[in-house]
Each structure stands twice: as structure tokens, then as C-alpha cells.
Length: 171
Length: 211
Image: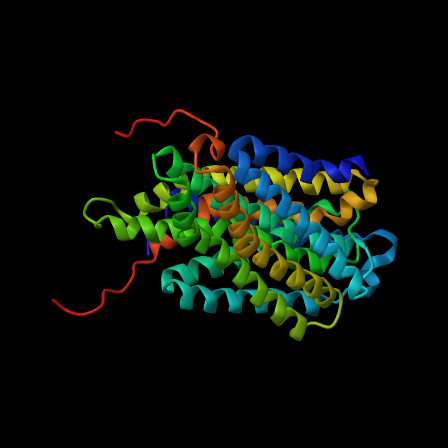
């Protein structure tokens, strides 16, 4: 049981250390996605087998990738002197599209596999598609909303959103 | 079309692994399953899934990016799926596979997308910001790999940690069950760093209009 918690815990710690307040929001969103994924899997009666758990955790990993992608872009912009609000907006407009491509591409494949297949791949794809859609909503709607609210509540000081690091001089 | 030497070597290595797996399978030493799980397995389903993923990836890449992006994404998907299958087959002699194997091989597509799509997007973005006189397409591909290195490290580290935690929370049977995911991660890492960007660079886009 303790080993099963090591992945999410480490992800949360890394996010909070690297991205502070935005990382805390992302960690909560990842936890919410995990809880919702388990809830919906139980709701459709999938049963918690290796197949179901793999689908849930794979979609969770896609969300970790998407959030890391967004927050890395935001941190880079903040460290270059851009305001936090502007950096978040730019991150969603630029790097956010890469994660959107990943979600949409995988969701299309999952839906087609549900249609094409009739065995274990179909069952896996059903859970995977649901969890991917949840991840998409959590990353692109909930995280955005929560981070904007955090900026409104706690202010836009760059130290609150990006751990300082020395930027390498170009050239 | 001229492909980078490193990419060609990586492709040869992948092909050798695939051939070795095929030879062992023909000798009756491929795909070992735990508890007779192989009896329920339909190879046709797996091939249909790989074909579907390849076709969808090509169309998605073409609509979303361009022909070079579509071909690179198609190559990444086919390479990763076949290599994951070959590695799973080879390693199944040590740890028996589970009946979920076809689904997990198809699921390893998530790693292919997470590692390949950002590199392709970055390569396109860098390519648009510089002229081809300043930078060759191969240099653009290298730049894209450099720019996405941190994201790739984070994704691979968390994926490996999670899969290993999942595998070691049970016994060797569970390790065998998630073997296709580990193989898929390794294949995706290899293709996204060494093969796909250089394949994208080797496909020269057709110029629109005339001078």
C-alpha cells in the first residue's frame, strides 16, 4: 500500500518544490483526477484489475506530463521577468497545445479501439478514454481556474510560483 | 531523403531486437504467459489495434501538423509498438506475461505521444522562427531535442517510478504483467530522442507556389 502511494506523493512534493503555489494547485488537481478516475471506474463496474489500474494510472501519467509541461513553460517565462498571469496565459496558449494534442490524439485512438476491439483492449480503452477526458478537463479547465484564483488571492509575486534558479547566459 | 547516422543505427538496433524476438517466437521460445493466460489471447486483436493506432496517428499528424509531422508520428507509433511487443516477448522468458498484455502494449502509446508530440511541435516552432540558410533541418531537430530535454526527463522519471512501484508492490507475476508498459516506455524514449526528430528532419517539405 505504501509503495502505491510513492508515485503520487513524490509527484506532489516535486511539483510543490519546483512550482510552489502553482505546484500545490497542480498536486491537488492530480489528486482530484485520481479520485474521480477511481470513482468513474467503479461506477461503470470495471473492477480493480491490473487492466483497470493500468488505464487509470496511465491517464494520470499523461496528466502529470501535461501539468509539468504547462508549469515548466510558466516558470521559464516568470524567471525571464514576465508577470505570472501573463506567463500562465502564454503557457496555455503555447505549450498547452502540445498537451492538448496528446490528450486529443490518445482519446481518438481510445474511442476507435472501443469500436474496433471486443476483448481486453476494449475494456482498457473504455477506462482510458474516460480518465483521459477527466484529465483533459482537470488540466485545461480546473487547474487554469484554480491557478488564476490563487493569483487573485495571494498576488502575483514571482517567488510564489517559481523556485529561483540561475538562468544560463545565452551565446 | 537522407537520415542521420545515429537515427539509422537506432533503427537497425530496433530491427535486430524485433528479428531476434521473431526468430525466438518461430523456435517456440517467444511470449511466455503466466497461468495459461496465452490461451485467451487473440493476436488478431493486437495487430488490429496497432494498425488502428498507426492510421489514426498519421491522419491526426497530417491534420494537426503537416506531412512530415504525420510521417514522423506514424513512424514513432509503429516503431514503439513493434519494439514494445518484441521486448515483451524477449523478456517474457524471465517474467511471464499476463492476459492484459495486448491492452498494455496498446496503452504504451501514451508514452509515445507524451515523448514525441512535444519534440515535433518544438521542431516546427524552431523551424518557423529561423530560415533554412541559418539552420539545417537536422540542426532544428537537435535544437528541439535540447529544448524538450527537461520535460522528457520529468515524464520518463515519473513513468518509470510509477510502473516500478506498481510492479514491486506485488510479486514477479505483477512485474511480468506490467512488462509491456516498461518496454513501451523504453521504446518511446529511444524513438523520441534518436529516431523521430531526425526522420522529421529527413522529410523535406514541398514548397508551395513558384518564384
